Length: 407
Ligand code: SF4
Image (cartoon, rainbow, N blue to C red; front, side):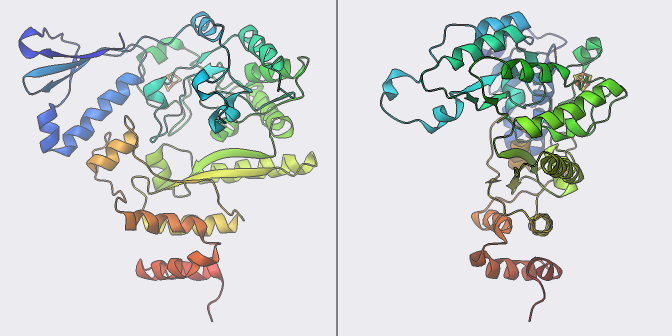
């Protein structure tokens, strides 16, 4: 398991259950075939028991064996309970490592993510099935961190690939074992998914009572669509509301980072992200809890420009919407192709791997900068270019919305 190798065609014995991809040469000649190959790769990496994948390359065959099944909790605990020094490699002695500053007082409580965002490689690294550490293992690590010489009582993160998926899994695991959905929450939360936040609340509360811990912050990204989801079970809905309150009132270090990623429903659907209305609903809840608790915390939304499917017009509308919500964006990214993601395959091939529909992607520097500038509509130096661009794309109607009445 978990290996790929190249072998001679004459040495290969195929199995009826193997998945045969279009050959490397066919993909070079036809990018649609490459796109269609990727669907299998993603589906198999998100299955409980994946098939073996094979592809002909010249007179050889690449064989991709299935990955190992998800770890058990005991195996995960064992891997976290090893006697790590928690220090950077000695070759960095005396040097400041910004990434180390960020993680030195943070605790990873689970692995895996069932979000399935199109641009993210977590499904390729860790898969969609969540494996959670036991409470004992987490508390043991927190106690160790509390003993570190420069620890002042503040944990920077109690999280994972997504902050709020701890212990979440299918109610009927036999259904999950056959499932190949890339996301358990997009386009809708799967009715088989148990979205109970109580085990996570229990971890936060247990950590906060440990000696030496003044506060535990949540630095990992929170999936607000899970917080807004109404399940059939009233107790689970109460736990979600309680979690939301506790998160915002006690675990935000001044700024809570969330990732709506875009405002356009069409782009968000290609990204496999929830609708922007859900972000707006969450913002109202965030603002209300802040008022009630007399806190002045900020919600920091992350956005991406030039994602496959995103056009300049979508970015222009994003500028108008973020202006209406009074956001001056700072945390933004220009889409960068990352191997093994559905977004990158769409970007490279021009086709969506699942629907095989053609999808536009901004690729040239000019196209990408034209999209990116809309994030910064509030900067005086961007204003002239944005106005010119809005005229060029036939959306002069948005000029007033961004800059008020023109003289
Ligand atoms: S059945 Fe539902 S909960 Fe289970 S893996 Fe599939 S999408 Fe996720």
